[in-house]
Image (cartoon, rainbow, N blue to C red):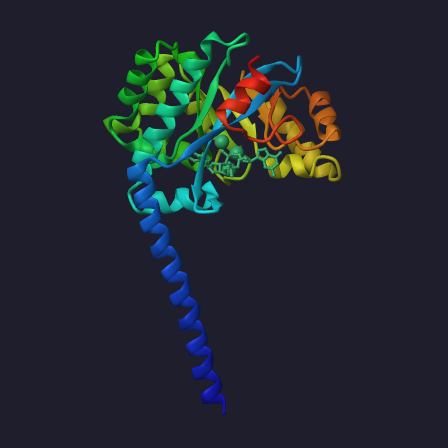
Length: 279
Ligand code: C2E
Ligand code: MG
Ligand code: MG
Ligand code: MG
């Protein structure tokens, strides 16, 4: 009886595994096709000064429409990294976002700054710095209009490899005048030593801390400490994922500089962004 049950269970597992593998394989094929056809889109989420409530920038976020659904970037970006497709996707993202920023220059209120997410693999590719510089000059944009968002783990990798010549591209880009922000700050379990190694411009406090701000004193203490530390290091501090007026009030009280979140706006396509934020 037990043996039979075991075998059935094995069959069930192997069936599920098959399904899972089939799904991943299909996704990989679809992703390869999407990269070839560039069937991605960027949406833009506005970022505001919490002091003046004026628009200070936008974060470009990739969207992949597939048949009737949207595959979330948290799902396909790791796959793209695994299958060696992330550099091509990253090039599409940087090219599209920087062109967009430039094309909005003649709006009544041009966008001050575009924040673009970069994966570690992209940063370690030898030509990334030159690629971004080329984009900026072709689009006649000064470097300080672009902000590169990298996660803590990426910072650590960049520092560990700092003695190899192709890996210093973050510091190189920063010397050129681009801004560097640490994304999802507080979730990386990494040492803070990278902050003094790299000249970072901005800390983005992860949404999970903002979520708990209203109801947990601990979250409030942590956010307060991050903002204090950031300011004493001369950094700007931006809060991610602000959803309620109450969270906004608390962040203003704590002297947080900037913020983005559904309270202000969800990420929206370029046309909507132009109408809503730049006219
Ligand atoms: P992230 O860079 O931390 O981006 C913030 C995520 O939070 C976005 O999800 C955004 O839509 C979402 N968000 C913003 N405000 C709120 C809010 O108030 N409430 C809630 N519930 N969510 C909010 P999204 O667009 O699904 O992106 C997820 C992650 O995928 C990003 O996290 C980033 O790590 C990655 N990603 C997105 N676009 C790109 C890209 O072009 N290149 C790379 N390498 N990664 C990307
Ligand atoms: Mg980001
Ligand atoms: Mg984030
Ligand atoms: Mg994230």
